[in-house]
Image (spheres, rainbow, N blue to C red):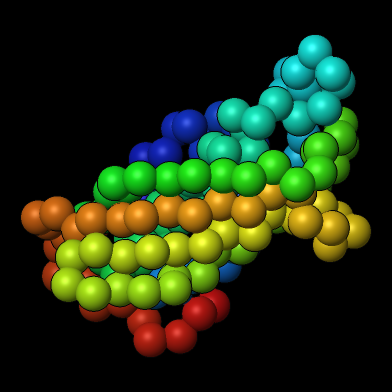
Length: 136
């Protein structure tokens, strides 16, 4: 899925771990990601959280989309910060799921909290693939 994700790649994100209901991605804050206050623009924090959410809920190999997301900004990200988004599934019932993402900086300080609500639709990400039971 990452190979087809030009948005995450373009923002310099890396996939550090992924498994059913779980994903961990990271991204370094670049100069072109700063807002007028010289802190990381909230849209980039949202994108990082959204990508972690996407990988976690699609790791079951079932095409899954967002049906709603929200973010709470806790502390600003700064130029050069390495931000890590760790997503964990909170609930999955039928075709609907709820996922929480904690975004932290390299010191482990929480920068933002993201919640995504997912909906499975028709299709497999990779036809015939059975996802692993464990997180790599």
